[in-house]
Length: 398
Image (cartoon, rainbow, N blue to C red; front, side, top):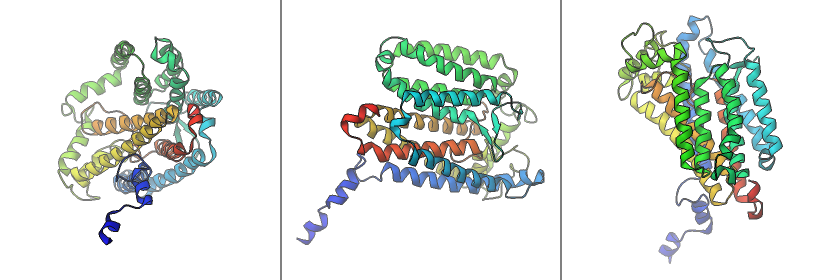
């Protein structure tokens, strides 16, 4: 009797184990929150370590960038509370809301063109407490817009070219504004995400082959016709042929990984951050992590990113099972953005692709990326929370 009661699972435990559709696994919400929390702590630790020499060389306090990153996280959490508590998903997926968000994003992208250039690009709006990169907002807005579009125009998406031609007008506008900044990296992420959502929405294969060839051709033109992009590609092919000029960042990044080996040289003991690797706390923070914490530290960062991405995909799948297609595509699109930026940033740091200015989500220093990434997490949590509560008769609106 005692043994039978011991092995008999309670109704509460059965509900807990099966509530997310996967037996004996933590919920997607729990994994997502834990992984994001760990990433934020790791980000603060590594930004503090990597940025001290850079801050001191410019007359700033030692923990200037650490405090800024902490501030950005606080602002991001406040911003994330807005869609989680105050914005209805039903309202978010209304056509009027979609075009309002697109109009705001397009207007902000135009305003950036009149801003002050930073490192040769006009990507930021000065908001006083941070320089906001509008391309990060464009990623989120395009995910929500395309997720609604492929459901609202599902017949056109799955039959013929009408769906692609309609969405091309919107993507073309965003593409043009991003190229004028220029921000080629964000453009690649947005176009790739749109393609991914169209693919799972059932668009014909022949369209992907044709448009894939067109995009590849335009990408080749974009690289070959702009001198600095061509230099980046050529220097990537041999990262040590000109270590004092075109290969400087990539070569120093690879040296950092080489010094770190398996367990690293120790936290705070990096040599490359001592003005050898420029602004190491931003795009090349993973390289400093590899030097100080070794393969183990890099593996932890990538594992946490994988858990965040996996949680987004689980939330997407559970919404799909309930036929809440807009919510499913939105969660999927957020996961694709995290996948793309993680792979591009890690590959760039490791010399697998040419250097590109894309942040590692939740890890690299940067206010815009941190803010929008946390808003994306809030949207995932809202989908997770509300998805089981929506009546079957109302799922077509979600």
